[in-house]
Amino acid sequence: MKGLFIVMEGPDSSGKTTQINLLKEYLEEAGYECLITREPGGTVIGEEVRQLILNPEHKEMSPVTEMLLYAASRAQLVHEVIGPALEEGKIVISDRFVDSSIVYQGIARKLGISTVSAVNAPGIGIYRPDGIFFIDLSEAEGLRRKKEQKNLDRMEQEGIDFHHMVSEGYRKVLSGRPEVMKIDGGRSIDTIQKKIRNHVDELLKKKNR
Ligand code: ADP
Image 1 (cartoon, rainbow, N blue to C red):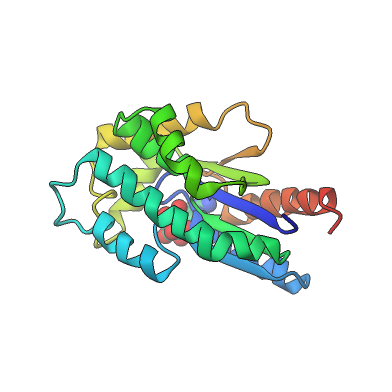
Image 2: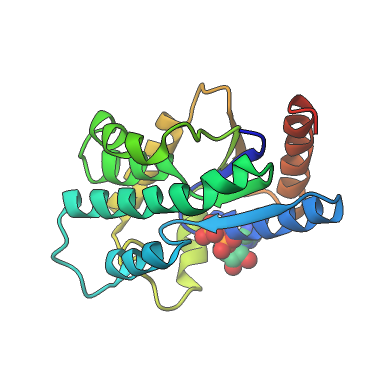
C-alpha cells in the first residue's frame, strides 16, 4: 500500500477526536491528501450498524452480537474507504480500529483476544496501521470529562468496572508493540499534538513521502 495508515486509540474522552482534527489540519497545510474515518461507521452501511450498536435502548445486545457488528462495520470501512484510499497514496487517520475491539469486546466483554482477532482478520486483510497513537488517560480524568458530556451512548453508559477493564486492557494490548506510541492523555492538547506531529513526520520520512 502506497499511503500511510494512522490509528488513534484510547478510552472515551481521551482526546482522540481533538487530536485527529489538529493532525488533519497540519497534514493538509503541508499538502498531503488526508482522510479521517470513524468507528463504528464511516460508510452508509457502517453508519446503520453504528445506530444498532450504540443505541442506549438495545440493552439486550449480547457480547457476541456486539463483536460481530463492530467487525461488520470495520470490514465495510476497509473495503469501501480505507483500502482504496491507501492504494491511492492518501493518509488515512482512523478514530479507533481493531485494537478497540480487542480491548472492548475481547477483554472488557471477556470474549478473548484470539476470538476477536480471528473474527476481524478477514475484514482487515492486508491493511495494518503504520502507526498507532495510544492516548492513555487516568480513569479519574476520564470520569471527570465524561460528567461534562450529555447524551451518552450505550458503550459510554457502561459502569466504572467496565471502563476500568478498558483502561487496563489498552495498557496490556498496546504495550511493547513497535508501531504503537503511548502518550499521556493528561498533558495539554498542544503538548500531545506536538508529539503526534513529530512522530507522523518520521513515519512519512520512512515511507519516503
Ligand atoms: P475522544 O474522541 O477520545 O472521545 P475528545 O477529543 O472528544 O475525546 O475529547 C473529549 C473532551 O476532552 C472534549 O471536551 C475535549 O475538549 C477534552 N480534551 C481533549 N483533550 C484534552 C486535553 N489534553 N486536556 C484537557 N481536555 C481535553
